[in-house]
Every structure is written in C-alpha cells, then in structure tokens.
Image 1 (cartoon, rainbow, N blue to C red):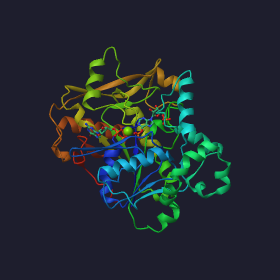
Image 2: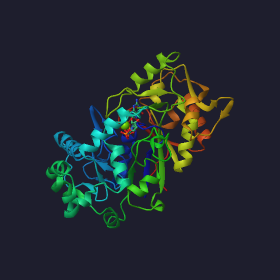
Image 3: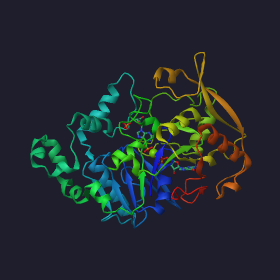
Image 4: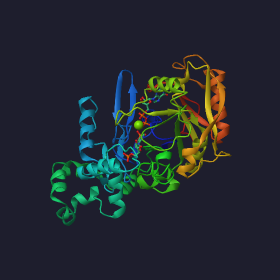
Length: 408
Ligand code: GDP
Ligand code: IMO
Ligand code: MG
C-alpha cells in the first residue's frame, strides 16, 4: 500500500513530523518534489533534526529513502545534510538513493534566483536556494540531471565553472543514483510513503501564482516525481495546522491584522515556534482558512486530513476560523485563482469556544476536550473530509491516531 503526505496550506504544516511518524510502517520513503527550500523538522525527545533534501524516514535505521525525479538537488546541501546526520550517529550508508532523472541545482542558479527576486517589482520572497531557476532550466530543456553525469558529451558542453563545481561530487552522486521505475519494480511488496514538500498553495499550478514555488507539491506530483502512475497512490493525506502560516510574500486572506491582532500574532508565532527552518524568517500567521483548506481537499482528492499544532490554542478563550471571504460586495466560499481577488479578500470568521487545557499528553481522540472535538468536527463537515490524525505537540509521540492510513 502506498500513502502520500502533502501540505494542505502554504508549507510548514508539520509534514516532517508526520512523515517520520508514519514511516514506521513503510519500507521506502520518497521525497517527490522541491529541493533545499524545504525544511522538515523532526523532534525525538531532546533531539531535533532539520531536513531539507533527505526524506523524513531517514531516522529509522532500516528504511530506504529516495530523492525522487521531481526534485532539484543542490549537491553542496545534500552532502552537508548527510554529514550532519552522520555526525549525529545516523548511519545513512547504502540506503539513500537519488532518481537519475532528478535535476541538479548549480551555484550559478542560486545567484540568479537571489538577484532576480531582489530585482522584481514585487518580490516573491524566495528562499534563495535556486529552486525556480533550476525548474526553469528543466522546462527550457537546458537542465542537468543526475543521469547526465555519465554523459560525456553533455558534461563537455558545460561551462567551466559548472564542471569544476560538480567534479568533486560526481562519483558520490553516481553511487546513489538509481533508475527509480526499475528499483520500484524490484520492490513490489514494499509499502511506500511519498513525502511532499511545500504545500498546495505553493504548488506551481494550484497555488497562489506567482507567489508560489516552482515544483509540484500537490498529490499528483507524487506520481510524476515518484515515477509511478496515479493509480499507484492508494491514499492521500493532507497535513494542516490548526491555524495558518505563510513565509514570503503573496496573498494571505486570513492573516492576523498586525494593528488589531498583533498580540494574537505574537502569541501564535512564539507558542508555535513559527520561524522558518530554512531561512529563519518569522512566519506570517493567521486564522485557519477553511476556504483554502477545502480547495486543497478538492484539488488533491485528500482522503483524510492530519491536523497539527492543536496544542498552540490550549490557553485560548475563543478560537476563530475563516469560513468565507468577503470580496467587495460578494461573499465567496470558493478559493479564487485571481491574486487581485485574494488580496482584497477579508475573512469572515466563525467563533469556537476554547478548551483551556493542555493537550500535550492526550493520546486518544475520545480524551480530547469536547470543545477541541467540536472544532475538528466542524472542519470535517466544512471540508467533507475526515480528520484521521491529530498532532498535539512537536514530539514524535505527541500524536493521536484515529484511523491508521495503512489500513485499506
Ligand atoms: P514541514 O515543513 O511541514 O515539515 O514543517 P516545519 O518543520 O517547517 O514546521 C513545523 C514546525 O512545527 C516544526 O517546528 C515542528 O517541530 C513543529 N510541529 C509539528 N507538529 C506540531 C504540533 O502538533 N504542535 C506544535 N506545537 N508544533 C508542531
Ligand atoms: P516546506 O517543505 C514554506 C516559499 C518561499 C517563497 C516561495 C518561493 O518546509 O513546507 P522558492 O525558494 O521555493 O522559490 O520560494 O515558496 N517556500 C516555502 N514556504 N515551507 C516550504 O517548504 C517552502 N518552500 C518554499 O518562502 O514564498
Ligand atoms: Mg518547513
């Protein structure tokens, strides 16, 4: 059985924590999109790991992890990450593979990414990791893939500085390279967990374009970037926070108003530790946006939702969620494509009573206070999608499983 975990908001929903948790029952974990723009956090006891390229199943000694064909890989970042894991006692040898169809990020692309974003009239606020440029080179058919490292003619055509940069990495990259379709064909009985990066609203096609990343962070991207057909994906899980965050620029209809809700914004940012894993930037924070979440459910055929960060609201008297937008004179319940409309959208909020109790030690759904269940069950009805897992803290074990995704 194969399960996909995607971000259902603007990234940083807690995918790393959940993929690590769910990887227990998988044999292979495939990251299928994005690059070192991602930052996936896993906390086990007092140990915290930040992963950017390596799939979040790596902490188990027996799991095979694969960087999929849809990824863009910066060799410097990759080997730094492998080194970090080694220094912390994680043996990665012989179980980290890279699809030979994945593309390489070159230092030149990183420079162009930074310069271009700075020069934009309205910067996107990219992570400066060369992501957009590498995907653009791929679309232009001028990119360099892992498989090309073996293609003398292509390597000879490279600019001198690119060849020089790649030279020290070539052998190590080739040693990890696999033909993913044939690898999966020889692991037919393995349970595969596909790990998304970014989130639906940062997806190149489905997101708030142009304020998006350049990869396919949607569920369909798992098929393309994982070198399987869509029918191989048995279940799609969408991870979302009990509130919303966004890093970088672009419309965010339910964002807390810094004037009237500055206190709430500070509280959520500090309690939820809402600072970027990759860039350290403070994340923009806002109410849970159900219009956007239902859009993510629809566009990814999400089977069930994973709600994280519910504990951040533990001390609140009242909780609010956005159930529609007011755009000019209109009340809108469907997520618009127009950036202009999204930028004008004012959230229509619904209020819920808080539970005023720590959820940290809750491990079953029934033990959750009635107010927390009421909030969750409203979300289920609104999105027409069940919430199968609830996360009540950043640690691996601070997790409530209502239904295991590994049962058909
Ligand atoms: P990802 O990019 O989706 O993997 O998410 P990040 O790791 O960038 O950001 C999520 C942050 O929230 C990390 O600091 C996690 O340790 C933390 N986190 C994950 N789940 C929970 C949760 O249920 N409660 C709290 N308080 N923190 C969480
Ligand atoms: P994870 O996997 C949050 C955002 C950037 C910027 C936009 C484009 O940790 O959820 P890029 O460098 O990709 O061209 O930047 O996308 N962004 C993310 N925001 N989480 C991420 O990944 C992100 N990856 C990119 O902040 O707004
Ligand atoms: Mg992140």
